[in-house]
Length: 102
Image (cartoon, rainbow, N blue to C red; front, side):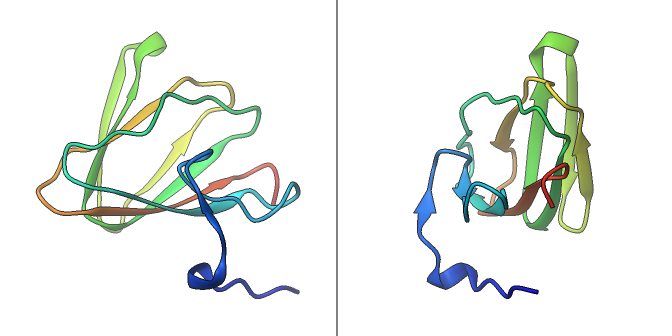
């Protein structure tokens, strides 16, 4: 068992949040209104849990677009290219994890 305290971890924008180590890939990202992360795709499924705010996740290759709000859980398929944008009026806070890793 391990306990992680997000406020004590080094933040990086590489994955749009906190990268704990090579084995555990999960963290929290924050986006200001209108701010976007760079496009990304991963070998594993990715899960988002929206803690605060609202984000739009676009999968340009599949011509899909979803709006996720506080309390929603979003699953992104392996290797699916996607872009996350804060589509709300307040800061968005999202917990993410690459599901195949945990």
